[in-house]
Length: 72
Image 1 (tube, rainbow, N blue to C red):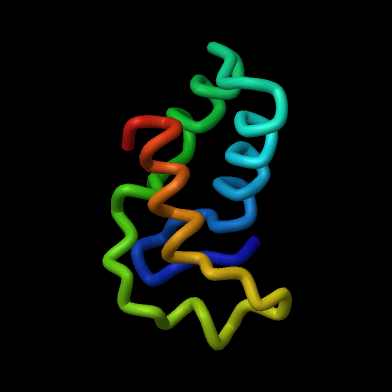
Image 2: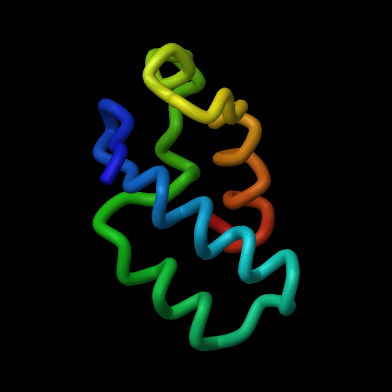
């Protein structure tokens, strides 16, 4: 699982965000997100993750979106 320095489980956050955006935010998705040890709102936008992502994902932007959807 890919992590930022803050310990955010990037892959899991992205997976839950994708589901929430496609299917709508359900209480089950929110509970899964809330149970993560760290959340998107902890992202400091340092950019250290960008060079590590093999898929070229703009991770800081994804973390912003996740924070908007999940509230933290």
